[in-house]
Image (cartoon, rainbow over all chains, first blue to last red; front, side):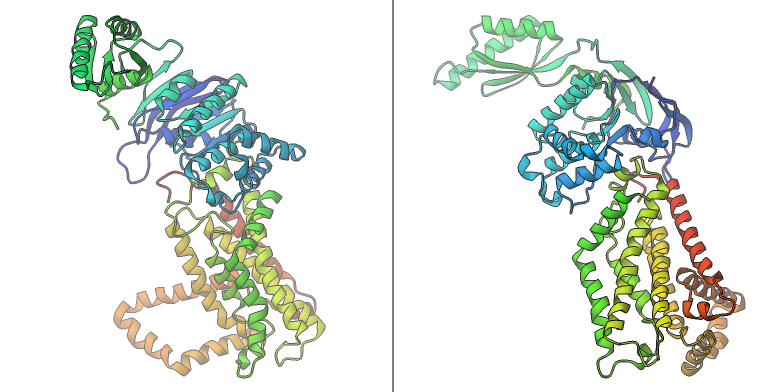
Length: 319
Length: 287
């Protein structure tokens, strides 16, 4: 195992509860490991300990058999903090050149590496030489990700990387994470984007009150209930008659297929299906009942279902 | 020493408009103001500007965000540092690079001021020999390096409150140092005389020591207060020792021990700064 964390304990001054209470896990080389839990669960503290930014009171961390503060470890890591603050007088290009030099990369490839990284994070070329202080939140997040990548890390620690990004940014982030997996880069990811976690992580750890409640592999996610959102085309101009007819059809279909009808709005409805098979059945029945479906998409993911079940077990309050 | 950190810090300081204004005023404004009619004779009788130390400190205090990732109006300063301290740079190299960058600016500004003094022939009423002029540059170099080392240590303290307290202590120590710095060029003996004179002229010494303090604090507390004052005197000496290099070079045999004192003070400050940086934690509650 590349990262080994054993029985980590950490208390902050002035707080009664332990921030970390015997956390143990392992991450293999090339694995994408997700940390999942409510706010204040201890996810960022774990990342801080892994980076040597926080000193645990007890327990042991090794990264490639070395302590996390070893310079050899720092040469192979990249880090994006949750709320990075940049030296705003730099341009994006200068900032990356600076971090390329700090990461002890070859100066002869600096320009090429920086340009490649700026392209990789999708920062528009127009902004490359603009001072960072003029960047929007999403652009800052991209430049933060770029500084984590510019040192060509073998291990990447990302604390809420999608925070503040626009939807194309989140999609790009997902693509980058998938590319990194192909490049055998080990990623430790702390995110609230469950969809993003589900798509890129190999395993997730559910954390609450400084403890890992469960670590699950996402290779074989259980087929849990989720919310399906459907959209249809109206049949006639008489919307009142149309609505009544469709509502009747929906109620009947849901009753027949064992699906919970959560709500019906104008040309949309939300249904809680039991599993994927149940979703396929309800869609097929609705089409058979002459409903012109435009789209049917999951509103929540299976991981969210797992999160919900953990939530119920642990008594977490949903955000 | 990490040249990337050094170059970046230096560029950042010199890019700061306020710093540049300060340097221009320091280098050109103060010498020009001192040769104008009515300027203080005290200034003119000294080899180096008595206010130099406090001005240099003031410059760095007002531009805190330049040498270190710290702005006092920002509630969190820890988010910038983690990116740097997780890079493969030994902490002592980080500290040394920051100190050297700050020393470059402080020493550069103070030595440029003296150069300007020499160029305009403004060296006070003392008749300065070439060796005295050369030594005045060395004096400034040592003051700049000493102040930078202490400030490096203060800026590494783990919380904003600690930094502010440290900066305040430095300012008080520098203010205390101001008088001795202005007189030291004449003779060391005069320093004590000057201090005694101030106490006597204002009649504060007997009144405060004899009447007020015993009444308020009692005899033991009075001793404590004296110890605090003594500590401040020693701290100000530590920060920028009053060394007249001209006297050292003219002494027979040449005495270099005070220069070693400056070097050891700087080394101690940088060592402590490295220890503090290693011991610090970076998290939401750390500030």
